[in-house]
Image (tube, rainbow, N blue to C red):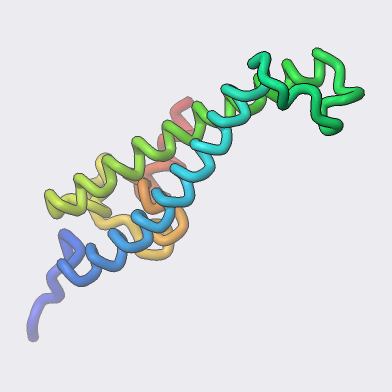
Length: 131
């Protein structure tokens, strides 16, 4: 009777599937980041854009708040982009999908939803219990 060997890494074909998912998410994340940065760079300038009807009636507090929100979202998007880029490096190193706490494979389902994950659900839940 043959002993079932536990898989220690994803195959090259599986890694390519994840790479495709990551590249798609990366493209969308970069577009969002560009949009947020555009809001930040155009909201406070003295161009003639601020005379458009869109800006009429919007008080300074609202503009400041939307700039704050755009800055926060841009920062969050930048962190997401960096995490996706690190995931691509792990794919190249063939270490992608391996839980950094347990050393076991992170489920495909989790990686399809959170492609930059470095912890399995079990490790993440046990970590939250430590906080």
